[in-house]
Length: 597
Ligand SMILES: [Zn+2]
Image (cartoon, rainbow, N blue to C red; front, side, top):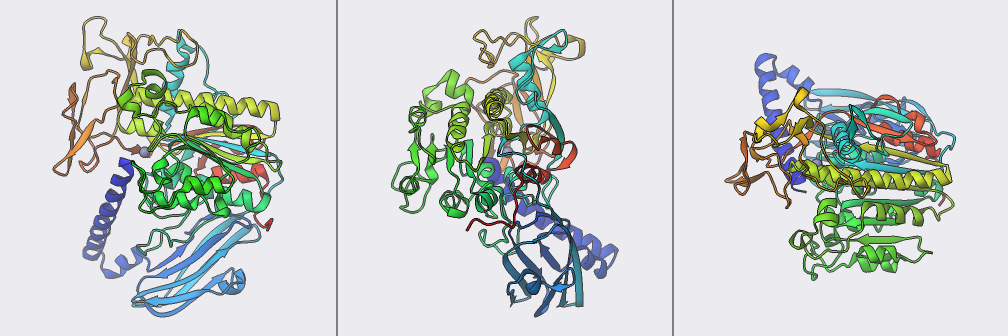
C-alpha cells in the first residue's frame, strides 16, 4: 500500500528528471536532430512487439505529440486501419496533440501485423511503424486454470519457506513444498514497458492480458492524458473466458481485494490507487468475478460506515447481494456459505487481512483490530474451488499470497515466509482438486522479486550477538525450526538456530536479527526523508536506496514459475511475463473470436 504511493511519486519525478537529463545531454553533444529521433513524436498503442491472442479485444490509439494537422494516416498490413478493423476512427487535434483512436477492435487471424502511422508534425512529415504478433487459437486441453501468484515471492522466498517448513538433513531437504513438486519450471522476466523494475499492478496485468504495461497501471496502455480511466484497454483473461465460453471466474487474495494483483485480473486503470473505482468496476457484467474473497471492505462500504474509504454512499456489499452473491465477513460465515451458491463475496477485514503469524498464532488483539475470525488462504481457496467448479464450462481462479510482498517491504522475512507456507498449503488444496478432476492447469508464479537473500544461519548460543553471530560457510550449522504438530508451519519463528537473511535494497534501519512479536516498519519519513525507525533497535544499517522510500523495494531479479496439468508443457526455459497469459489461454483453447452474446 505505502509502496504503491511512493513508487507512483518516484516514477513521476524520475521520469521528468530523466527526460530533461537525456534531452540536455543529446542537445549539447549531438544536436537537436538526434534528440528528436530519441523521443519519437508518434506513440502507437499497443506498443511495438506487442502480442495478442487472435480475437482478443483492445483499444487502438495513436498520439502525435507535436502535430501540425489532425490528419493522421494509419494502415494495418497496408490497409487503412478503419477499413481493416471495420470501425470508424476518431481523430482529434487538441493543441499540438493529435490523436487517432478506434476502440474495441481485434485481430481476427494469427500472424504478423505491421501498423504504419504517417502524420504532419512541427518538423515535417513523420512516419512510424510497429510490428505485432497475433497468436493462434489452440485446441482445448484444460477445463480449468488456477493461477497462484505469490506477490514478491522470489526464488529465495520460496527457499526460505522450504527450509522453515521442511528442513534439511545433512544437506538434503527432508521434503519439498507443493509448489516445488510440479512437472514444469520456467524462469520469468518481469519488466514493464516503462522501466526495469515492475510493481504488482503492471506485472499482474501482464499475466491477465498478455500485454506489458507501466508502473501503477493494469489492463491498459498508458496514454499521455492525466485521466486515469481513459487509457486504451486490452481485454483480460476474466473478460475473455466469460465472453467466449461462459466460464466461472474468481479472485482470492489476503490483501485488499481491490489491491493491484487481484484488481489486474479484472479492472482497467492507469492508477492502481483508484480502489473505490476498482471495487465498483467489479460489478460490471463484462468482468464481474463469480467469487471475490479477501480483505478491503473499506472500498465496498458506504462512507457513513466507520473505516470506509469511499467518498459516496454506495454500499457495494448490498449491490453484490442484490446481484445474487452470498456474502460473508468472517471465517464462520465463509464456511457456512450455502452449498448451492455459485456467486460469493467475502470481505474479512477493512484493510489487508492479517498475516498468518498474527492471525493464526500470536492473535495479539491490537494487531488484529477486532478481526478475530478471518479465514486462512486455504479456507478461501477451498471454498472458491467448491463454488467455481459448479460451472460446467470450467473456471479461472487467481489466488494471491499477497503479504509475502508486503512483509518483505518491511524486512520481516519471517512473516513473509509463513505466508509463503500458507500459500503453499493452498496450492496443495488445488492439487488435490486437480487430482480428482484431472483437467486443471495449475500455475504458481511470483510477480516480481525482492532483494532478500539467505546468508547462512544465526545463533547466539556461544554468546556472540549481532553481525558476529551470523554464521557463514562452515559455521552455518542447520537451523532448528521445529514443527511438533506437523502442520507445515514451524512452531516458533525464532528457534535457537534461525536463518540469517539479508536484503540488497533497503532504507536506513536497525537490524537486530530477531523475529518481532509485533509487525513493525524499518524506517519512517521525517522531514521528507526516510530514516531508521527510532522505535526499533539493533545495528544501524545505512540505506542504499534513495531516501524518498521508507521501505525495502522490489528487485528486477527474474523469478520462477512452476506448473502442472494439461498445458503445463508450455512453460519452459526463460519466458517473458506476458507468456503466462498465452500459456493459460492456450491450455484452455480460448477462441478470442467467439462471443456467446
Ligand atoms: Zn510490493
